[in-house]
Length: 203
Image (cartoon, rainbow, N blue to C red; front, side, top):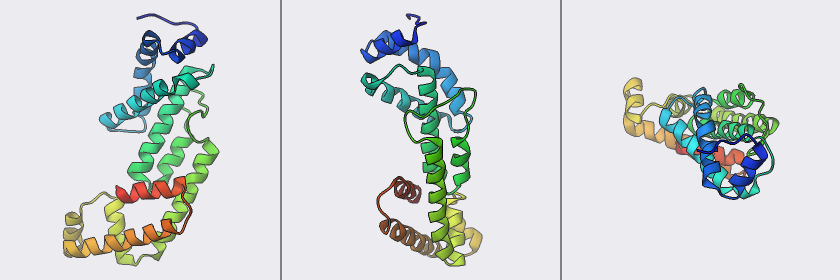
């Protein structure tokens, strides 16, 4: 494998589609990026998926690269990949992603690929506000069941057993909550917040 010491030359050759340059980037940064992502995403397979997606996007967008630090760019892309993962997996616990948006780790990261930290915080503040607004409108029983389902990750059968009710009743309460969430989304213009809510409802 060829070794690169000149960042601009490396970017030039990645931009030109040279496989040896891309191989150098992958082998040089992949272990550190995997370790970095593991601080936020525990599942090894999901971590690998996030990293592979980042490297694929780097390759697909190589011709748009400017003379930036590839190291900082890749760490930023991985961090944003983790944010998106957490948004999908646990959006109701918005504090997780807000906290992640402020973490720079051992690198000084700048935003190249997604939102900046201020936009990210505003996004999750608005997302949490919309979730809280709908949750407050649910009946106590529906809210309890919906939290058990979406926040605690319990199956409908487990909820039914714990509460001493039928699975059909559990499904009815969850359907009522979902209908109210979807109504709330439909009344708002299409946005990243709406997309995030839809992802959470689908989880």
